[in-house]
Image 1: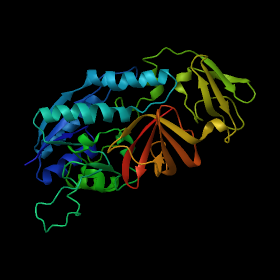
Image 2 (image 1 turned 135 degrees about the vertical axis):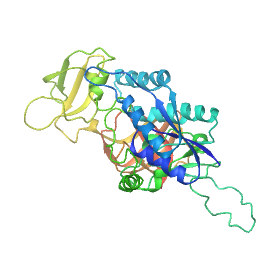
Image 3 (image 1 turned 90 degrees about the vertical axis):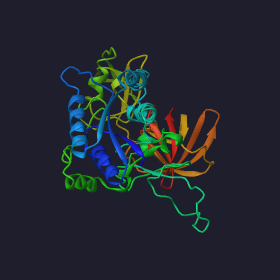
Image 4 (image 1 turned 45 degrees about the horizontal axis):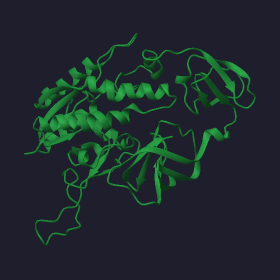
Amino acid sequence: MSRVYVGMSGGVDSSLTAALLKEQGYDVTGVYMKNWTQDLPGMKCPWADELADAKRVAVQLGIDFKVFDFEAEYKQKVVDYMVQEYSAGRTPNPDIMCNQEVKFKLFLEAALEDGADLIATGHYATVQAGLTPPLDPEVNSEAAPHPLKAVRGARLLQAKDSNKDQTYFLYRVTESALEKTLFPLGEFTKPEVRQMAEDRGLYTAGKKDSQGICFVGQIGMREFLSQYVDTKAGSIIDQRTGDVLGQHDGAIFYTLGQRHGLDVGGGLPYYVVGKSMDKNEVYVTTDLNNENLWRKTINLANVHWINGRPDEASYMIRVRHRAKLVEASLKQTDNGVELLLKDAERAVTPGQSVVIYDGAICLGGGIVV
């Protein structure tokens, strides 16, 4: 019997993941990853409540339960990285870094060292196992193995529920990690997951999905960053005329394409088209066709390929979570990857990730420069 350690966050997705794997005959242990416990002014960190909910579900299911403390490593690998990127004027994605450094590295290593054969999470994605030679020579060698079987050559595929698909956040996971990972929810939609949790009477069946920063909860990025960086007021400037339209409370808080939170008066809406961290200035325009808002060529650095470098060809890409897939030609460069888009995309933001797909297969991606 394979022993699976399930990352349990106290939410419905990870709760059902544990339930399904137990029903499938795995020896399941629930693990709460204690990544962040700090309260912020006006906001109590929800970690203790999440831990309690995860424990309740483990008791319901009759499975062992552990707590893995990654708080020090999380601060260094995720939080410090995020603050540094924002301070440099870029817009990072902490969820992607959390998956790369914590869930599918630290958690995986700790689980295997503790006796697990596999790990599992409640992500909406699918692992396609590599094809292995059949034991019976009469068995069709091209037959696909069971989707939850972990063998060499594992590939990351999009989930059945395109609205909930989380491969965008998983593109930096390694092939070796996928070989030891199960994603039982990849074949279900979110409504189906809710219904299955209710059918099993899971304590978290009706719990709302978490919003806001991945490790803090409801607090917004502005409030979080204010605890770690010193900011000062600066000018909001019309890019075309050079006129000062108003004041901002820190250029670090603004990102390309942003419309809300500018507070620069009536008339046509303004959009952020650039900023200077040195001058602490934010540049805006009312022109939706402004060249700074659109990119037909995207350069990526820190590129990660899950199953090895793909051929130079045409693929589908996603420039942000929930953005539609668009066509682009991939060209390898000395510094990373150059993507030539069929149609220009709006607000492709430095620091964010672009993820590349070949059909349903997530090939990998990189960071926008």
